[in-house]
Image (cartoon, rainbow, N blue to C red; front, side, top):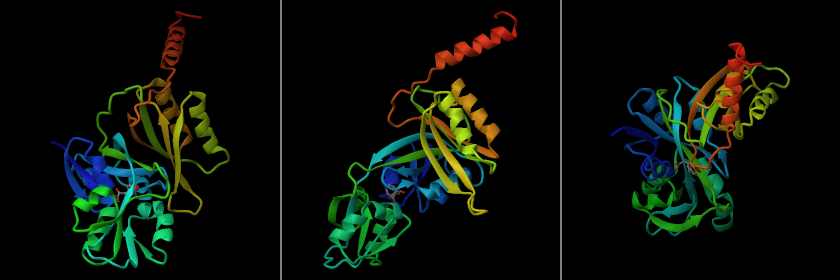
Length: 296
Ligand SMILES: O=C(O)C(=O)C[C@]1(C(=O)O)C=C[C@@H](O)C=C1
């Protein structure tokens, strides 16, 4: 059975996401360590969070995707997110509450209303906060509901969430190899750095629009050198095996200083993508025939 390094420890949302894939689950403490495990070949796959509907992209994942040797996503899954507040049995007063920054951000209003004056502390994950509370370091942890089964803690509150219907998307990553087959309901991700000149981002987006390609995500992260220089993470509907997507990525390559392919894989919602592939194929065979002198 393949091994999947996931952003742990046991009881994180990422563990629940990783359980949806087939493999032996290997918890690691941080997102960069999950990437390191798959890059080093210690595990075949890594499972990490990429974006949350309330708090947005997960910066540690975006940064790790461009560092070191390439890794590509081969699958994604989306989890509904709601939080439990866990405390040590017998706790009567809460002065500190700990969790992953993305989790704290999703319950900020609840904390202000229900636990005014408590100090929020960022930890490496929701489950590591639970472990810290178990050890007596903090009074409460904001966790995934399943964490109560892994730590000797009680539920102080459940179903905590400032914004209803929050969801987090997770990626299953591996080293580059054979791509997943196109399904007609796929997503393709790339990250580009562009030359510093007027209109370059609009040129990239125009290349997509001209080919009827639907943009599903656009994120920027600093290149971390000169202030004001960015990388752009671009998600589109479609698979690189489709001519229009391959064509668009080739165009992005021409406009970019650097481009890294981050994967073509089935979308979690399985909603078919309107692809116009028949028109693209007909157009390509017409050009082919013209080149051979068979058509005018
Ligand atoms: O700490 C966890 O349990 C995670 O899996 C991380 C994470 C995230 O990075 O967004 C995943 C889902 C929730 O939105 C909160 C935290």
